[in-house]
Image 1 (cartoon, rainbow, N blue to C red):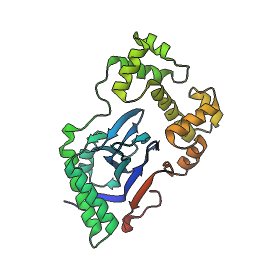
Image 2 (tube, one colour):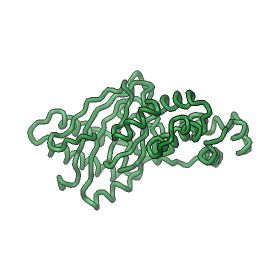
Image 3 (spheres, rainbow, N blue to C red):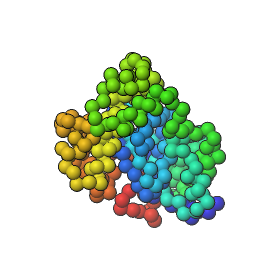
Image 4 (cartoon, rainbow, N blue to C red):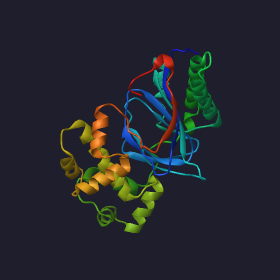
Length: 286
């Protein structure tokens, strides 16, 4: 096994109290969020998937990801093992890139990630070599078991697909349950039930997520002011827009723009994390 296949940039064990969030973002390195307790609604591009104990998010460079909400399970908050890393081996990278972004873990993988984190914290002799080799082994286990991984796009009913397509095409306009029910030819109660069962969220939350995701893009990529962006993504009331943005992203539109443009990832201030960066590979942007 080649120790130079990857570089571990950052390790953390994080804790998200109920109701916490992590703004949608992307970066130029790989990252894994492995859930060891609790659950959360993870954002993957324009999708949302509920993840709980034993599942992990596998993000590649420039994959948009975040967390819209977290919940306690059996009295335990969302806790995760996190690893940020870069890959240098082309063949290994090609294998990793075949993994879906949302995966089912295993006891072996979790134990290895715990060992990687422990080595990074203890920093005993040869800790970096042990942590790196162990993490590479964990990645190979992930590749081996990719056949049982969970896709972010499971088979959904045609009704749910139609609703999502309509929202994504018409999010700038007023969209009501009456409109969606008429569009798909079913009752309001039915579409609310089937949508929640298939996506884990309400139709209204999905609509707001689509709008806020578009707003985040405009905040970073345009010079439009917040009032203009609010109208552009379908909110006629700027105060409602700001409140919704903060609820989903975890910070105000102004702070998001400021910190995103400066390259800083924003996490809810309630989030706790024990983190370590290997001394030989310290970076200023992690």
